[in-house]
Image (spheres, rainbow, N blue to C red):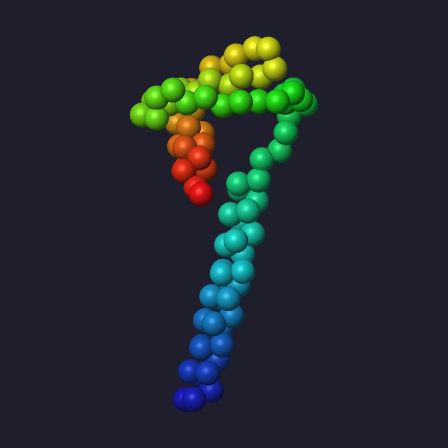
Length: 83
């Protein structure tokens, strides 16, 4: 009886440890972005005029690009709020 319980415990613990070890790697890989060939090479400034909207303006070199991306606006505002 003790061998069966011990085996189950070891099996469950091993599976749990594997899940915990894989979770950060999966999250890291998911959040990792890659640059495209057409990515900007000059300085970029992001301007969010309305925190409740999904619109932000990117000033790239001499031009302006308007982007509608609620997730990006939220991430920028969260990053700007950190001290």
